[in-house]
Length: 288
Length: 288
Picture 1: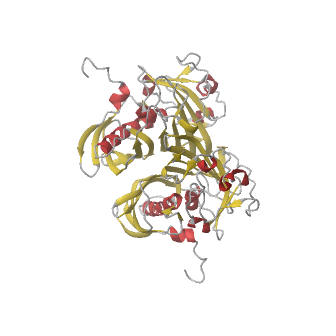
Picture 2: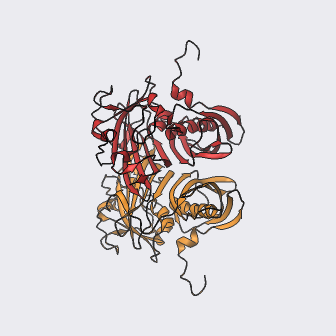
Picture 3: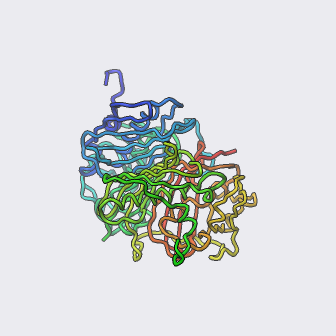
């Protein structure tokens, strides 16, 4: 980083991809490093991994002739197994370059084994776009934009018993109305809400929304009788608009816990109150 | 089909897969035929295609040594482009065979081009499973279990202007409270509800739920000012329980229409009122 540049934010450093080779047919391989800082316990964060894979996929798509499609519109990820910290590869395959959108699949590989299998629809989100219909309003949350009145998540071990280095890199302030879990008093509603920003105030962009949609603790922390790690099996995210600068409001809700799995939906609003990202995930869960 | 067997239902015939070859490493190729009957206009139905790909993926996974994982637990599909009617191939790749679950990716290919790119988590849904928490109750709908009081969808062209051969194969009775679109009077709520069963009363199973989660017309038909084809870009489905025999209740809801896309969520309940499948999709849309 030269002296004239803004310092690179840790999220951009940790999600960096380096092109190793690409061919004319839309295949590309990028080197990445699974970062020790964007972790929960010793496991890399799923949203962080998705953002990393998305960077490689978008670079692969835009290396192929066609219209520029800089933004992820939709992303799906199958979490096959947690990658180890350290070097990994992302293998991308451009499936289609359309006029308005491109489709890419990409895989994070380690020692030849698939760890994250992802697909992306890429396109362009415009700064002057407006909702045509719908778009739920942001929920009122008690934590102020500066975090006042909320419960800040720290990197110390939470209910899962694991330290969370990632929480030194983001500022997540839980709405006190949904923060009972942190004191052993879950509300039983299956919903968590928070304000979220990166430490150092890097403005949100589509890439960081892929982290945001998986950023909150499992909504099942708000239910009594669930314990431990809630590993994401499959995550799907839709990015609907370019986020305005400032902290995001994130809401995570559980709907059904049955047979060792829970589905959770996530919604993300920007400071204008615009619904900028939506996601759903199916995760494994242990119940007592 | 021998004389002693139940006649094969058209859904099972149309989603049939024939193994061409498989190797020890978890790669398999199946031949399939994209059926002219499971179509809207001249385009194959997305949920039908997903069920077809899922059959191949499950066969590929269970051909590799390991526990039996007969059921799809989660599925994602990127609809890269509509396949032509007729022969196609499904290329499957088993990513992981775990104790409780397997991960498989699979692609429906035609003439070397990817048409549907899918991933699956496979496992086993148990007949005696019960919800542990949550699971929204089925909505009351005015159409009776025998279709009385509802508006049956026919294969004649609907608001999209396209004939729907698939509607000769399923019996879809729209709740009259959400059927205004069929008479040019959408309610403006962005929600459709229906009872659904296969013609001939084939009982629902996990495979047919992959059709059910994409079976309703676009929920945007309930909004004034949207027209034409609403092509699915990305669809994600979670199967949560084995469905009981009898018609399903299906609800499709739109949440945000912006910048040429709409997200829709789908929920499916069985005759016990159990939430058996959930899905979300991002689709392209034209607004006036």
